[in-house]
Length: 113
Image (cartoon, rainbow, N blue to C red):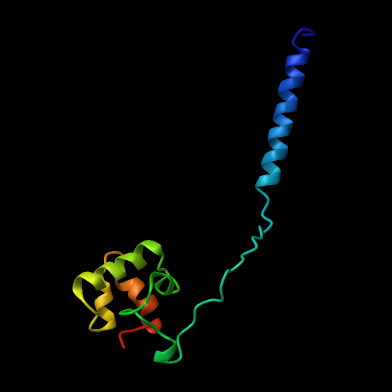
């Protein structure tokens, strides 16, 4: 028994450490995360002057739209260059990556003036 005592104490210490770690990481206390926005939240544009014209917008301007990143902005520009100006805002759904849900999120921010 005395020969096994260091081994038994090591195992006991390991089990206690596991129990403490489990207790610490499974608490029901809320975890808080600080969210920092680089730009103000996007809200509905008040007039067509505030909207982004998808027929003339640069990639940077298009990326201001909610959910539009660099790749989709470049697809919009490529579609516009290949097919000509958008005739209406719904036509933007022809661009790969812009489905009905995305269109619903951006339609109040875009125009084809």
